Image (cartoon, helix red, strand yellow):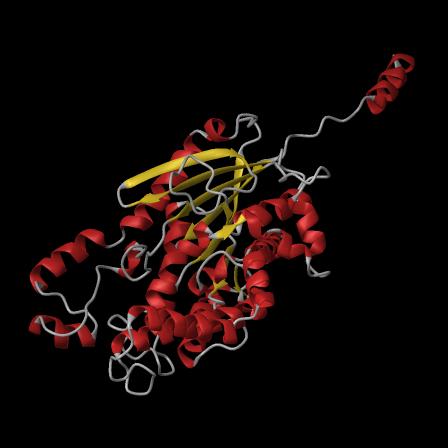
Length: 408
C-alpha cells in the first residue's frame, strides 16, 4: 500500500496547480463635464513634447502608433444631454470622453483612458470601468446624496428669492421651489441605478466575464465641482474662509451614501480636487480646493479616502496663452460697449474699424508661436482644463495610483 501511495503523491506534486480565477476589479468614475472629458485626441502629440510625459504617450499608443485598445479593460459609459441618456460600451480605448451621442466615439478623452491603462499595467485581474458623467451638474442639487436631505434654501435665497427681483433670482419663486424639489438628487440616483444595472449583468458589458470568478468593487473616482464653485447664491460667502463648508458636508454625505447603496463600506474613494488655473489660483479657487480636500481629512475616512490635487497637471504655458485670448475677447466687448477707458468710448468706430483694431491688438499680443502651441495642446475652454490631453492623461494616471495605494 505504501509503495502505491508514494508515486501518487509524487504525481500530484508534479501536476500544475490551477489557480482560482481572481475577481473582476470594478471601478466607478463619476462627476460632471471634466469627468466626461473634453480633451481632443488631436492634442495627444503635445504629451510627447515633454520628456517627463513622453513615456505616458507611448502607453496611450500601440507600437504601430495607433490608439491603444486594452484587451483586459472594459468600460460602460452612461451619459447624455437632458433626458436623452444612453450607454457606450466596449474595450477601453481613446474616445470615451465627452460624447454628443453616448454610444458613439466622441474623439475625446477624460481621465478614464490612462486610469484604465494604469490599472491594466498594475493588476493581473481583468478590469471593468463604469463611468457616469454629465456636464453642468452640481453636488448641491443634481448629485445631492439622500442622507443630505432635501435641498435647503441658503440665507441669501431666503432673503432675496421671495422678492422675485434682481440678477439670477427666479421670477416665479413657487415654481422654482417645485422644480428644485424635482431636480434634487436625480443624477445621484441615475448613477447608482446604472452601476447596479451593469453589475446585475456584467457579461453584457464584459463578454469574457466568468460568473465563477465574481467581481469586486475596488474604487470610486469623483471629479466634479465647477457648478458648485460658481454658484454664489448657494455659497454666498464663497470668497471668505469656510465659504464652501457646505460642499464639504455634502461630499462627506455622498461618500457614505455611495458606500451604503453599493454595499461597499470601505470602498476606496478618490476625490479629484479642482485644478483649473494651476498653481496660481485666485482666493475663491483656493477656498474651494480646501473644501474639496476636507472630507479626506475626516477621521472616519482615513486610509480609504484620498484627495488628489489636479492643479499640478494644468498646463501653465497654455494657460498663459488662454489669458491672452481672454484679453482679446475683453477688448472686443469694450469696443462694442463703448467703454470710457477704451478707443471706442464715443461710439465713433464702424464695425470694420473695430475688426481692424481687434486684429492688430490680437497680433501684437499673441505670437504665431503662441498660436501653434495652442493648436497643438489645447482644444477647449479653461473650465475644461483647456481640453488638454496631457492634463487629463496625468489626472487619470494619478487617480489610478491613489486608488491602488488604498487597495494595498
